[in-house]
Amino acid sequence: MSPMDTCNQCGEKLVSARGCSYCEGTFCPHHQLPEKHDCPGIEHLSKTGDRFDSGFDGSP
Image: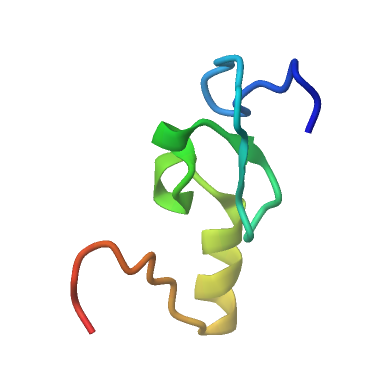
């Protein structure tokens, strides 16, 4: 990560970038979750039958 990285969703300059493991994009903390940046990786998971679960809703 370089000091001038920006969020791929909103363009915010980043001090600490967060990478998405599904699309490998760089995002601010607000857009880090795949559902917050319209991640193309989620569509791939639905086509392959895998289930996407960010784990943040508390369900098992």
